[in-house]
Length: 429
Image (tube, rainbow, N blue to C red; front, side):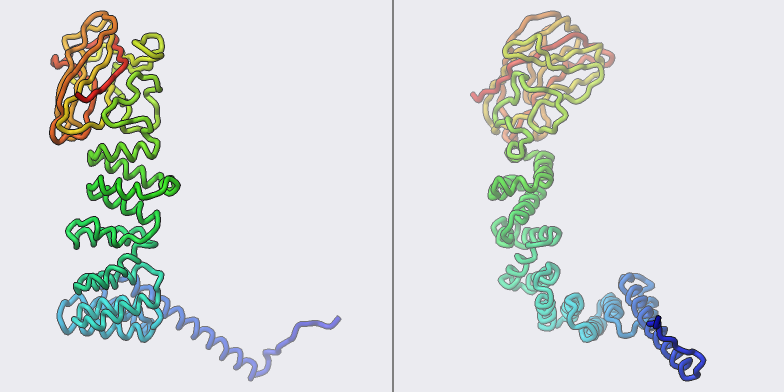
């Protein structure tokens, strides 16, 4: 059978020389490639502000004299001198970089920055604009060009570039909004002119307003989204709710929370789950439902055997509780400022004994200041009684906290027995 292999004899001098030359060429090309890659790498990894940058630059030039990254490093080093001569040299270095790599938008951006620092605004505009032409769908070139126009006072030229920068990149989108917010003196209209179309942009703008303490604007932008689009961003929406809640923008936080079905039944100026018919102590997150922080020697339970109406009530069992302060069975309710309200509820006690009995406080949720306290709960065993608390909300109040506390009676003051709640109701007067 004929062999398909070709035998090359290495005994011939010419053949040996040819193989040797080929190997030398391969190793030479490989070494040159490795040198350039290594030179590029060390230049890229070195910041111009690094004290060792000049020494690194010398090594990078030796390894990769024709690599644009070495010119970028040289340009950055020159720029640190902050003089007219060094700025001009920095620009010249970047001009060499774009000659070596004319289709890389990054070098044109750096040329624009160097030219602007050198005082050559015309050259800077040309460089930034060319970077946009090379990468029209990229965010960074448009961000750089838009910023350049803002610095030059050319707001009309800046606006379309900055608006396009908000399309695909969350980080730069928020930076564009922040730039407009500061530049236009916190004018929402100007900020929104830079918001490109798209649900993700509107969600980002909602987040931006929430972070800036603009709850009304955050809710307004959020409500521009369809229900379908809102459902696509549950995590971000939850962050917005938490942010508004933390900033004590309670009316807007309530609306967000209702829409996200976190507090679907909560309403302004009404106690949520007033008769405890729905489960309490649920592990599900809520902001405007009953809250029961863990308190030692106090048990809070849903009671289906004892109730004033309906099928349930809330029972608080005190088992020799002796701390000076008590805080449990609380709820935030959105209200209006400077308005009169009447809070009523039904209570029952069994073997309740203490020099510091429980009471119900109403506080301003904005600053946690006490507005009014109920009469202390009656000691001993008492059948259902209705308690009425009248109050007027302060001028700065947009929500109240209803909470169970106790009358102060000093250290080591025990509280024992049971207390039931049912049928809360809040009415404007």
